[in-house]
Image (cartoon, rainbow, N blue to C red; front, top):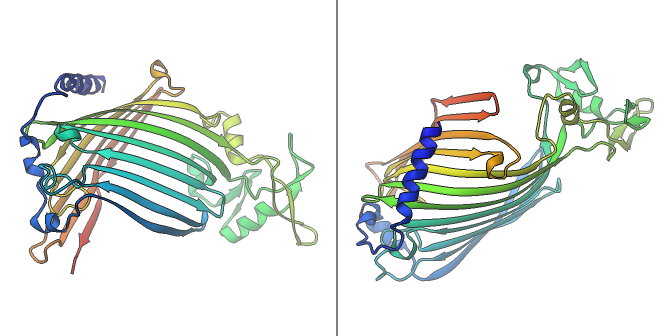
Length: 358
């Protein structure tokens, strides 16, 4: 694992010395888009935006906006036929009735100033108080149970939902009578900044990427917060302080870690093989990536882990229609190491997509 990281870092550092070299653009010739896509590509700068509406049983009804600003340049620009855009700025914002919210900003500059370099900057700020937690062990595969009573199970969610809202006597550190309506929920707040640069090798089909990501994560459970409750005597709806959540119980029992949140500092490296003809909406080509994320206290992180991820996508144009194609995506495996714990997830299946355009 360390050899892979060191090799990718060495290759990336070597390419830094070539950043100012004049290039003949031979590295981009294999990326030329189809004549149909080129004919439809707009010149200049333009804005796109669509409203975003969603509904989810957990986060509730959501509304927001998805916007993009494109800088495409003129048709006489040498890069016009080979890049989806010269620069793109994406801005997405959304709010949900559960009080979840998010803001995403992303800047992408492929083949900066006609060079082999691509630069990306991503920022995300989000808060979601509707995250669910039912445990980490095999017990989660069985029937539902209350955090305050592991011995009683419920065969249906309807029964479980009524039982967790029913008032019960409080335990140590709880109010006199409490509800468990919010005891399987927690709030996550995240701020993330990611900086990436990749460099096209040879004729441009291979790229090497390096990046740095900084995150701040914080979590909160809802002990003492007023929540829905049911009076066990009258059956009437009322409110009461929430009891100790399952996540807090597991944290105090050393079954989970990280609930206190903190800073996550990550160094990213990747080797990419890409022959797609039109990156945002390809009709043919292959995308293959082997990437690594390394986090350690040596680089300012409060967490130690190392993750290796491999993925691949394949696109093939169908023999009928100008843009009809099918794609096979997301196969590979992921290796994650944290402290003395090792996790290996091998994915043998993927997602098959068939797109037909009239």
